[in-house]
Image (cartoon, rainbow, N blue to C red; front, side, top):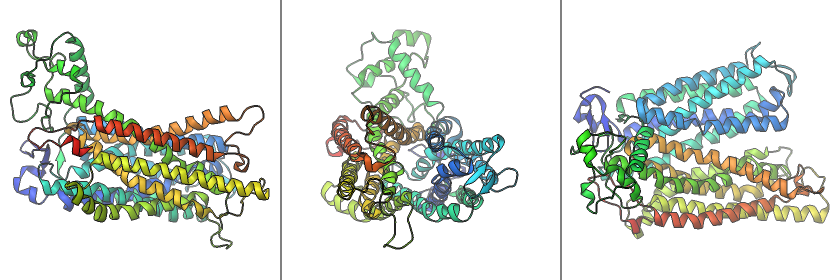
Length: 576
């Protein structure tokens, strides 16, 4: 950014310091490039990752357990690295340059992966289609490419949704309404990319070649970068505010140092910069809130502070204190998303294993649908519900609530958590009925029992509906409630629920197996599910979801919304 850049009230900056450019930058005119970038990037990511476990097993000659473990480790890394990208974006680079730099790393990784599956000498030598003998160097090259991709996606995931939201001015009521709509269509683009990946690219990898199967995602990623750079002159950019971790630590240290200092009854006596803007670059001042009052001690100006001068490790501004409070308030909401993410993760694990034991034929033909491909119905559900929510639910609920967005973000998240309960109930009931048929007709050793796999569609469809409410609600909520200079970090924090949910699901499977598979018993989740009871596991997740929903209601009632100085405070009772 140049020295003469013009900053808006919400901390954004218009291109090249020309105030007239606010009419020609940002808003929906900039968003198609960001949404196009995300759609192509997600096509590239899911096109490469959806079938990855089979590449490990058949092309890298790994055992099923090893392939599954490597796939989970890599996937988990993709949802942890966003913390790195978010830190750099909020602290030093800004979202534009973080996305730009990490996209280059992403393309290098995708290109190397495509080469490792297609170039002679780099790709494994195969005796037949699924019988390969890779060298250690070839395997290492594949994992180098994958972890470069994991690093690259870590710079894009936490920044791109926030960067799109940055294009709308919080102080402009018309733009603020469009911001909520942006998150809906942003998530819509993700699922368009996922739909193409799960259908077209999986088929290419299975029936054409892995070289093309990884090469097309690499091309898609190059197109994504082209989309992003094409819109450069239209973007509004937020200047990085310095290390957020340092500021949070300063509040903690200052509060502890002043543990015996009394907080004044008049909160206007707490330390704050006299200037109109806060002392944090790119951030508005935040109004004082009454909860978590211990941290207010960091903003109490003592005689020592007056004599020795301002030391940020002894005296912090109210805005800095409220940054820490905002993060602490977000943590319970973050935690409430872990159970939902565990439910969501069943689509790529137990739902697939359940479908494998059902009739996979399409309309009694000789064409068999891969069990994992049923996830298409989750994607189709999202594609249906996003415009329905944006065009039908929002205008309808607006008439009853009087709110421009219809529902608050917490209400939206809560509805999704509630719907997810029924997804697990549907899966459990289907499995109960399937096992009844198995027992009645003694189908225990039959690979595919005569019950069509399309009975799984309701559980996939319900999860897709829950996604539209919960995941999109989380995207918007973590952006809105994050301090201005910590929005990428908070977006990354929301993404880590997916990793935590996967780890929780894995832990539950381990615990359930250790308890139920004793004394010669096969347990709930044996290799042959006809002898098991994964319906019990689904009921367990349904019960946890009910408990989680109840806890979430209590958290939502407790939550205090962040209010920037100069904006109209949100009616807390109405919001919840």
